Length: 128
Image 1: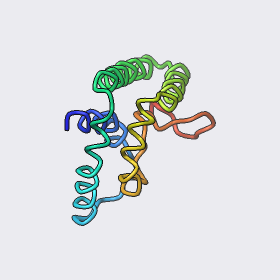
Image 2: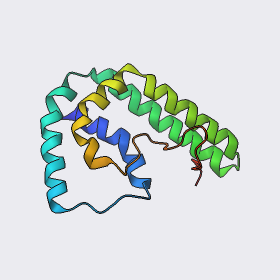
Image 3: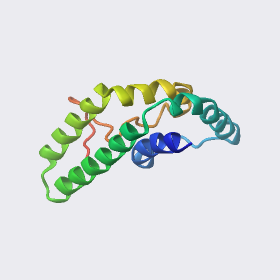
């Protein structure tokens, strides 16, 4: 359960700032909870130490990007967020997490999947 909680906590910052989120029905919530229970064995197979390191790094980068935004260094913040996003996408542990979380994909269509929902050429800015 701890591994699942860490994986979901990696996504919480993104979920919290999702602007296009649609309200979930009671049925959607029940289905998501069932899917979370079903993905538990998959998540337990992921190395806990690596999950902790991912979480710690995500918090660090989020803090750094926030500080850059507050300092008015928007271009640097955007570049850091994009670089971090690429690193996370290429991280084998995060790839394992995403495979485990596949059952939730349909439920989370409108939620960004990374702490920073930005990419090169995107009209979105990490500081906004």
